[in-house]
Image (cartoon, rainbow, N blue to C red; front, side):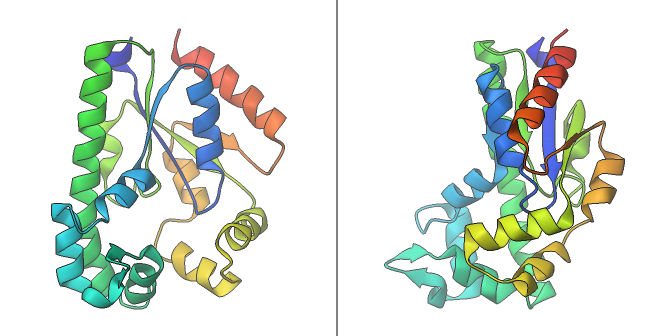
Length: 200
């Protein structure tokens, strides 16, 4: 049951993790997203948000809100600054995921708890989960998805990818792999098969 099924979903940039998580949610999984939690934390009203403003300066504020693009522009060319930012955000994100898990565990309304954690292996968080699912896409497919979604170029994609393990390393470290090159019907079928295995 739920107490034994705490699952992480990871993968490279724009590999299609969110689409896979939506399919799992449609089947009844309790799903949380590390990226969504970061978005919530990057607010001047939160303690982590205040720390980020102190770290990066008030120039990251637009209309009194933290602008994620300005944050990215500051840290992706500065490895030390990126490490400092991660030290603020990663523990806060993992704590919030754990709070969500405890809520789901108490309610017992679902058979699976799933957390979408892009940097799962990079931050050593895999030990918190019963198993990990890696979403793997062809690099050219992921790059095009990223450019379409953000309006940024291939160089911006490569810079972000250089900050994490390769998608193939993530797939090697994971317990399960789902291929997502764009055929959503195939992906949905793979998710259904895996969901049935995990809930047996």
